[in-house]
Length: 329
Image (tube, rainbow, N blue to C red; front, side):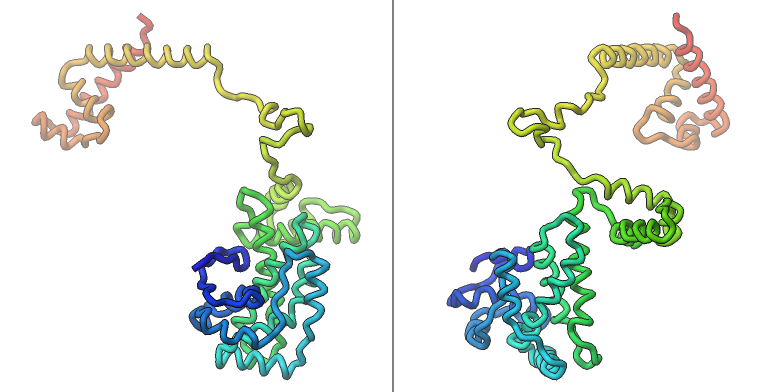
């Protein structure tokens, strides 16, 4: 048993007796097999010679990856339908492999649309490939659509999800309105500027059907990226952002004064309680100072008096305490 990385997820698989040339294919095979059949690599390796092509690895270099992707021929509608039927009916992983490889170039095309978010194109393509695999797994050929028409939504969804996760350590885009703003804000602003010469908050909010406050908040969050407090201001000088942050904690004098005030207030409170009549002191302790305050009826039953009398005694005691604490002497 060993661990392999499949689309960013760590999965433990059995690679016993697996030919080296077939290991990259098994990344695809394992994901596709999740809902089709159990991933038995001993059975899969018997069919590893079914297709001499393998899924290209983006990490080998993007130009090399594109050269590998362009080697795969596009499928005609009839060929695609036949392969999809084999996959759906028989769980044919060779058919799934051919469907994925024939559409890899379309993933690159979609990933190109998201280059402006500051993430590596290779990472976007890798995430898009995961979406393509999921689409192949769920594709229904009887609906009369081409695979890429259905898969493009899965590809976009996985790429967008990756961008949202990678943009900030603080989670954003938790609602549909925030997700719309994240991907449409810059585009809508540009369109308004080109059309009206202005990109006011009200105009953007009206176009995207969200509040002005939501537009302003998302604009601020998109305008700044996460920074590490340990990053050096100038390389090599050891001076970091942490060094310029103000210390907002109270100074020693203020802390000492607050502590002394609390001590004196506690002493005065104890003295005021001690000056109360015994029954009033017990009522205050049970009604106010106890961890679980008792009800008026419970105290009334204990002392053998009415609830109203307990309430009157409590009010008298509170007035005495207030007067004692207000008197500096």
